[in-house]
Image (cartoon, rainbow, N blue to C red; front, side, top):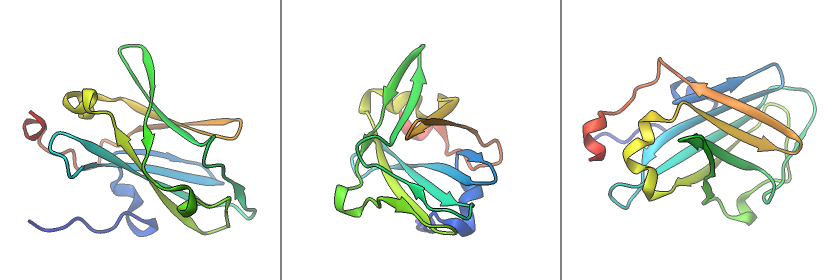
Length: 138
């Protein structure tokens, strides 16, 4: 099986969820985890602006909504790997774990919300992304 290319600035458009404005691009790609039935979100932040963007390991949170309830995703990226700021034209990949109870609905999540500081960014589903065969998750 061919390994997927690394997720980065050059191919963020392949993300399953995307948010973009003149200061920031956010993209999330679903990847199967090593444990069968588990999934990861590779979450890419790109600073499009001219100033550093402050980041905080403990306060930067990725959430999803399912059945009208908000669920936080567990951050697998370690504290020592997490920057305190993102410089202009730089990117950072953060990995989040999707709780196993959601493994059968991973492809039904309509949007993700990333909370960074006092701002919330809504990442919408990317209809142009390659959505894996849903059969493989059952």
